[in-house]
Length: 308
Image (cartoon, rainbow, N blue to C red; front, top):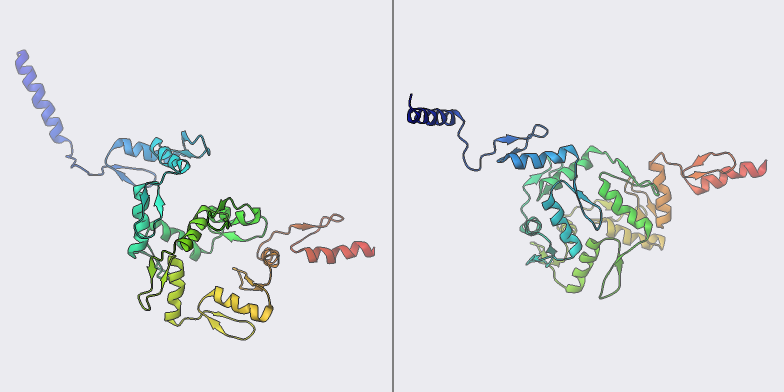
């Protein structure tokens, strides 16, 4: 066989091998993750994704120490520290560091909620919101506060709550000086100064600057009054309205226990009460090491030692 014939034979053999390979269409996701089953169009994307399961995060932020599996994720995160938010919502003025975040936010204004809970029917704009909500039905609250015993379904909820006990309010309003524990709370507060009300009721036309306030308002039209006064039996559509009404009977502001609904006139009383829902006993006797859930229980116990 001549060299020319060999070359022709080799070319035919290569074409035959390529023909035997499965044809992959453009955009087809043929690479799957063994851990979670997620599919990818490229092997590189699959390898990057697999870092999530490995727990390896080689890219760290110099400013806050947060780590990431990808360099691109680190770059996006660093925009938070820069304070630059070039993407703004035309409806409410809220700004974002990324175009994707703006698109997700705009779903709230659209009213489209494709993800609904099978247990209670509540709908969400994003799948992540539904997953977080479903933890409520599970009843699992794995994260509890060491100071008051209040429990949460997510670690983020506990961290946010603990700011209340710290007393630190680093976010201040330039217009009135009111301070907040979180940047999000400050932004919501600033909407009151702007006077902009993007959420309006379809039934009566009343407008609100927060979607949450619109939801509460709609309960008035529904006729549902789930909250009642323990003193006179009067019923209310909103818990906050009921608590305001209770001032007539108590002469004080009222705090309500999320676990059992019991009412207290001070936050300190509520925090002490919360220990009754946990096994934590933070008050310890110096003389016999016995522990108690409330300071008054400790004082009563200590009388035993003083009598002796």
